[in-house]
Length: 429
Image (cartoon, rainbow, N blue to C red; front, side, top):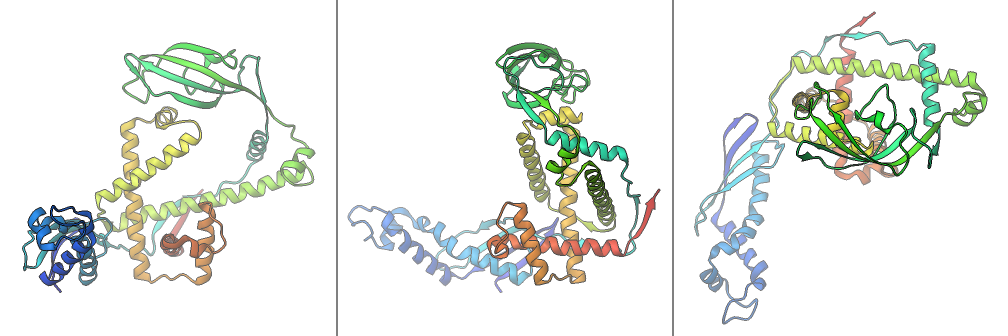
């Protein structure tokens, strides 16, 4: 083996390997044959120049890039296997001085699977709240949500907007000398008791097609410090005003929406679904408590770039979700009253814990040798396919490399269930 592991530090492996001069010479010849037709050398027809002449005219360096591509990735992969290293990111590869007739020296730094020290994962003690009993009020709220989801929407073409109407607007905000990007097709309910934008009262009585110039002040405790207490000017265009009409809660509603015979049966169906939701909520709280304790008991230092990538993925996912609802991150911070600094810190901590959790679970899976049956794989593949909008038929084949993710999630679920089965669970009254 022409490789030497120099050190492993902060979950990064530093090693070097060499490629024999004869092997690299063959790679150079292969590079020449691949590229000879691309060069025009005076005195030679295109593609007919010899390698000696080409290198004398343009320098041997013109062949290096492809030659390195022919040999370095293959040797890098073989070296990882020989040194028993599991990379979790792209390597930083440094090619040494290339000299004819001498071996090629390569230095590598690559992030690898971090070392995980497992604590005692049996007998984890957790406190979880008692599963909440479904009340009549919960059922009524559920039925009201059903009415809302099955509401009748009527466009108000020439009528003024009133409280409870749904508006669709475009608006632009200018604060001092700064004009922010236009917000288009923002849809919201005109609720003066719970203002979101801060200028809802100006929209009361507005009609479709109206353009309004609104001056307002941001609150002194506004979540975005750069805007807090400042005077703002909004240019608002009302694109749509809709009157929301809720259906009567009666037997006909129960039959059409709930697919049951009458309102009494709809209430029973609602209670059953709410009971299932409460049970699922309790299960999720238990899982979260177990994972939190697992993170406390196990040690792992994860590469920072993985945390950065995960945080970016989480932010992108949140941004897409907000955009689908007509909002953005700034509006989200405003509605949740979160400051940008604390939001970023929270996102970073969540990303770091998510990455740490995966590495720790992977270690537990290997230690306990959890396996997945073919039937479980089929079911897992079908569920995963349905989650991403893919046809469940032939899911395992169609998912391809994504099956590695499916397999890990199935095994991770077994690891979590193992800790739950062996935990000391106290239920708070």
